[in-house]
Amino acid sequence: MGNPKVLIIYTGGTIGMINDPETGALKPFDFEHLYNSVPELKQFDYELEAYSMDEPIDSSEMSPSIWAEIATTIFDKYVNYDGFVVLHGSDTMAYSASALSFMLQGLKKPVILTGSQLPIGQIRTDGKENIITAIEIAGMLDANGESIVQEVALYFEYSLYRGNRSQKISAENFEAFDSANYRNLAEAGVYIAFNSEALFRSKLPALELKTNFCTDLALVKLFPGMPIGSIAPLFDINQTKGVLIESFGAGNSFSNPAFEKLLTNYITSGGVVLNVTQCVTGKVDYGKYETSQIFSKAGVIGGADMTTEAALTKMMFVLGEDISLDEKKRRLTINLCGELTYTES
Ligand code: ASP
Image (cartoon, rainbow, N blue to C red):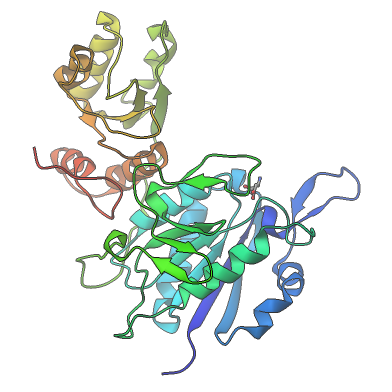
């Protein structure tokens, strides 16, 4: 067996940005600049190769078509590498990590997303450690010669998180991510300590590429006193195929007959409504409070302990599949790639 081979896919983000001399604002720059700013990469006893997106972007510009491009690149080059590192802006990294976990099902190799809060060219950058350790993890094999990580993960500031459980929690701290409802996959100190029971293992025999995402979706965050008229246009099957609701606590809502009617009519006409909690930890638990009945009565699906990022991208994936409406609804409730804690009801 030779040295591990890792492909670095550069999409942009702060890690590779420089200051625009005219405006002073940070803007994406090419991979060459990033590579030259981390001379340590040349010391790796791994074979490193790079693939750069045509135009590096700030991750606020990320889209399902770019996710498809990243996923297709990994799928096409899958047999040639032991692991993949995706350099990505931190702002939407949790969405991309979630989306890629649904696009690339059946992984037996790691896909590690990372980036930084400060550009690689700045003295106090957090980017160097992030990229070096992400690459190291992407090439790590166990005693049987199999990849230790076999899923989409996100590495940031000494922690490795499951991609579809991660969320950006700080716009300023180096510790910018968290995975509040699931254990971290690893901690990097002197040693990289993996939490082996937490690692995902797919039952699929081979890697499957699923890029047909449905984007006719809306996201509604409830608040006390919300005027139902303001969200009514979203619950129209000619406008959306699905709506994700961020509800209160364990999946609760105000008891508003107009809201209940809106939900019932939309679901009867073929719309799919999924419910996740606004809380950082815990899950949607119908029946715990009377105020969850509005959802269970109307047929709103409980999203268990999924993050908003995972729930939204899972809806994109599931609603884009060529399967019956009932099967789509069923798949939203089960665990596909570690995104939710499944409890048999
Ligand atoms: N705006 C940047 C981005 O997401 C922030 C970062 O990379 O940390 O591309």
